[in-house]
Length: 217
Image (cartoon, rainbow, N blue to C red; front, side):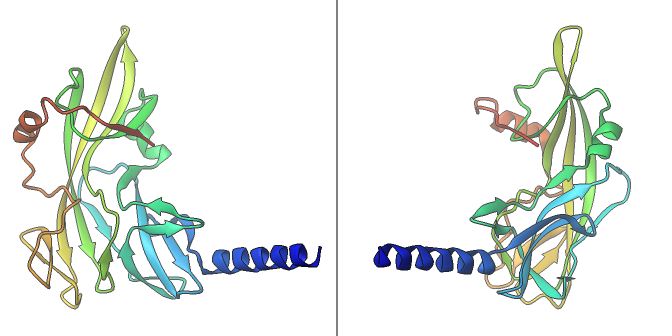
């Protein structure tokens, strides 16, 4: 009985330690961003950017700090390992503004097989702060679609989000050139970002035989 009690105490202490060391995620915490932060690690990361639906002069600035902790990562994990991906999603109010008839919204991998759709391009200016050191999970830009039914058929309003990236010159890990983000170490282009030179026609042709992926949000 004594051994069982000791085991229970050990498990409780281990669980408490794990929780105290994990990141806590707060939605729309600062400047439109979801932020994960940890008092234990004294660090923070970015998750979803909550887009207000504006389509002209869209400027997304990566904040340098949250709750006094430097925001150093794109993407991370909160709680017991829930992943947060850096991506753009419209708020509930923005969904009504972008497509009031839509009953469902998706991140869409490609649109080559979608027949009934209205396509709009939105350029998003993204400024990377000097504190960002690591990119873990990023899916920035691309296709966001609102689906609605009309006369018994499915229709989509598709927004193609294209990113024009600038980076603080004091960032030690990344730099920007011609609207794209690169690693300083080897000049490699940062992937997972849809840049402004995105070619829709080529993308459709390249994905004509690829199964589409719809991720609801």
